[in-house]
Length: 260
Image (cartoon, rainbow, N blue to C red; front, side, top):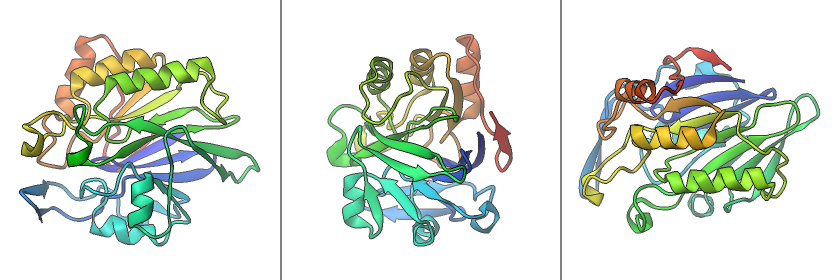
């Protein structure tokens, strides 16, 4: 597989002949005036929409926050044949397919096989945060002849990562035959806002290390660590935390395809 980091949580995953885009955000740097707060985007996309080529599916962890789906990203959805997200997003955005936790859909691959996409539990902050941050989802990508890939989405819970790993090992995820993860794309950055008194809304660097140990021997790829003012732990902090823990980490260079 290859992964091209566009910026923030936005990345293009090339897998099984398909192009999958996570959380599309392509606006240029700006401030978003939201009820009770301001979200500030610091950097623009490293790759423009036109440079990505045809996109087969969007994996949208949730639709409520501008760093996961901004104006440019929302416009993009109309040109993508499959958009997978939460059931709530499917109610709010026409054409979105909502996945319940552990529900799977099959995407046809050019080689005649299928890529199974399964919705996974995720929590965008501390316990009970849903009334503030909304419901989010992660994704599992699996199929014959391709790596099994975990995309965490905006998940801050190590406990949910442990549940996913346990279910995989037990073979209890419907439609999924894989028993472990080969590549994990973790949304880190320890996003924080005043709405939840500064509690981390995505994985902190220490939590990402815990998740990586649970997911071992998966290759760990980090996104969602830069580009927005509310990311409190940048790529340097994350890389040092992994190095101190003796763990390998891949941080894709912006705009370049990282082959795995």
